[in-house]
Image 1 (cartoon, rainbow, N blue to C red):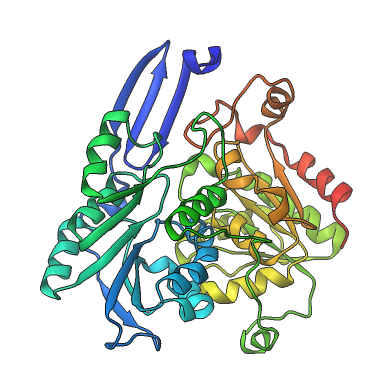
Image 2: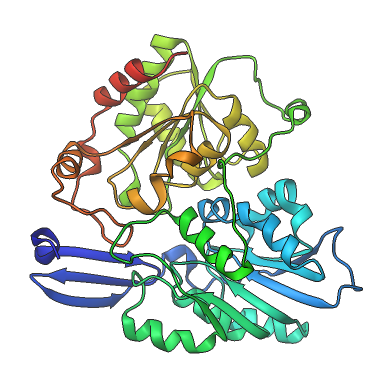
Length: 411
């Protein structure tokens, strides 16, 4: 353990927070965000054309909670489909993935059980599954960062075989990981050095290669775009524009709105670009605040106005995508070549720094606080998803971003 992490470090994933203060380890349970309190999800079962009552077996896959997590999983669906040909394949996840699944990936699955909200109410899920007599031959939970909500879902789903990842020590102690492992009939061991930082796409690849006993070759992270679909989207693709994706599920990943306004004004005036602020419907107030600060008519709020699958097409035609550490980054990587992500570095190794061979030809700039860059250069820090580095995101000034754009991008 480095001196810095001995003095203070924090593992923060799922519903548990583990801190080290002067070598003393403290574990606390986090409260759910207010909007998730007392939320009863509505379950929806969607059967797709591939579904057949003639298929003898049933396979269910629990999805991780975030859109970015799904993007880092979907590349393996063709391999799952090919291996489990005689199975009806059911995905179980929240409704944020629905548009991506139905537009891009429906050929690889047979059924989707989705619920509202980020987390699933376990008692409601159990009641729903029991009421509808839903049983599976195989249940797969591939997520490396498996945490109590994932394990709880696995425990209530009726399946003859339950396969999971051995998992991360981020949300679980050694003891908790050992105890929760008992609900699985088979564990896929990580086959990686837990002391090293490995990107999530590599972890997922490792899991499915072991599970399916196949060599998986990934050449890129691209999502296939249908050129004819652009005509079906009510959007003016003729004007030059860039995307701003300012929102994140966690406040600590959010960048200063005044800084964003200054960057947007600079791009609009210097390069004659229009800025479209993208996010969910609930991000509308955030977008309006940035617009109000900027006092610019060239910055537009389109939060919640387009389906998720349509946003991939809008991202594809953008001259530049500027985002915080969030789903917007992974969406950009999958359809665009020009991306800037502004981050404190907390998920730098596990989620942001893609393997080079998967992003060849893309102009991606991961902007970190200067102090962190210096520590990386001098090997004074070790970045990992589980540890929150003590670096100030707001120390990244808008003038630095504007100069980076001038130096690295052409419009």
